[in-house]
Image 1 (cartoon, rainbow, N blue to C red):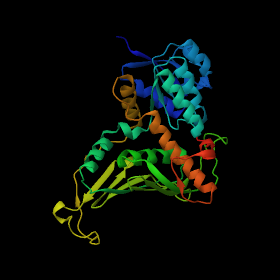
Image 2: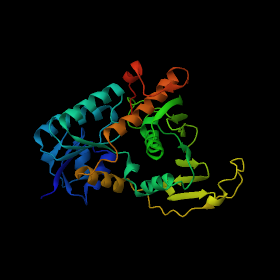
Image 3: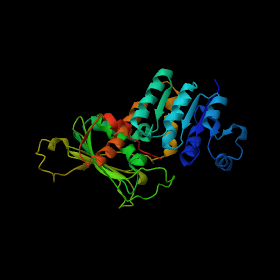
Image 4: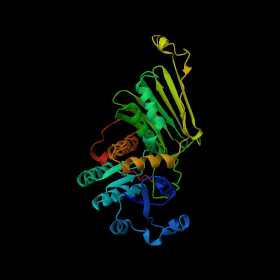
Length: 340
């Protein structure tokens, strides 16, 4: 069999990463859609100009593709994925968010179910071997029972980055969000992708159905690299992805019968080898999985669940930072969050 014919919609920074990710897979990029075609010509001077489009409808109509990446800006994701599914594209890899409202996301699910398209969402850590290994260790009790996950990053939107933290919390906890209390940052720094995108930073709490607590803060009063801290009854994991630092410490098992009030008890290092965090390689792993037959590690439902947590923070803010129960209902499902 020849290589699968792949297409990319959107050729900004992430679209270019997708192009590199397709290299070394069973797929070959044969067509690209970008509203500013000159960007493609500048980056790929040898790419056939007749296979570069500025309109995704024409792109889908004229190209017979086996797989596409949707890497446009957030508000167009749902409409492009639906159009691709309805045109018969069998495999679709979409960047987050799947949509910018839950009502639109529901339409997307209906279309995908009707057409049978295989759709994956690029929450990268789902394809990271270190996080899969970490999940197994947590399930084996290396730090006791998971109690909370903390994420902090300097100055980034809830939909731009914190949405990834929400997905990781679901992944590691194995549970769904029960309620949130959130607040938005009103600093109002213009979005670098355009003034039409309104994706403020924020901070707050997520409580999951199994009792795991999530704490996030991406407020605009810091400009520091992001950090995850995963805490269990007897241990802690600190993850500094950008610097390749993963540190795990836990009480020795023979001392776990001691009261939890003995919080000063020694926690010994637990051996854990990590690899560099490589966005292109992780995207490549997602493409390989999507191109095959294995169950998807990050489905359209996973993508929508993380979006719902972002929307819930906005809903909490609008109600005076009160507790908001999930799943959301009523007008909250119609709320539009203009994530780039």
